[in-house]
Image 1 (cartoon, rainbow, N blue to C red):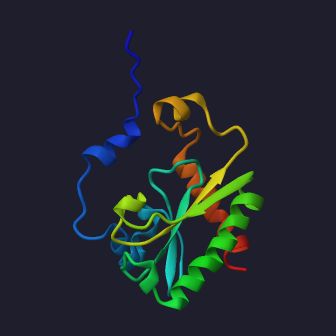
Image 2 (tube, rainbow, N blue to C red; image 1 turned 135 degrees about the vertical axis):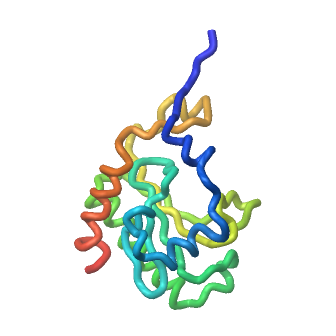
Length: 165
C-alpha cells in the first residue's frame, strides 16, 4: 500500500511565479506590500518577516536591508540591530508566544544550507516540548499544526510589547 501526503499549500511555492531578483531586497524596497509579504517590523537597518515555509509555527527571520551574502562585510550598525532584535524576538517567542525554547541561526552560503544564499538573514524558530513527531523524524516532512495567517496576526500583535520597547 502506498501512502500519499497531500500539501496543497505548497502548490504556490512549487508552481508559482518566480520573482526576478532578490526576494529579500524586493520586500525591503516595497513597504506598501508589508501585509502581503507578512512583514512584522521594519526600521532603517533591517526588517522582520514571517517565514512563508516555516519549520514550526511562529518561525520568522530578521533581514538587513543591505543586500549581501557576506556576514563579515555587513556594517556594524546593521549587525548590532539584527542581534538586538534577535534578543527581543526570543523574548517575544518565549513570553508572548509560549515557546519552550528557540533555535536561532544563520545559514551562510549554499554549502551552509541557505535557501536564499544571496542575502543573509537570521532565523528565529520557536520550539515546543513534544513538537517533533514521527513524520519529521522518519520522512523528512514537517506538519504545520495551525493556520499561518492566525500565527502571523498573533506575532504581529506582540510587536509593540516586545520589539518596540
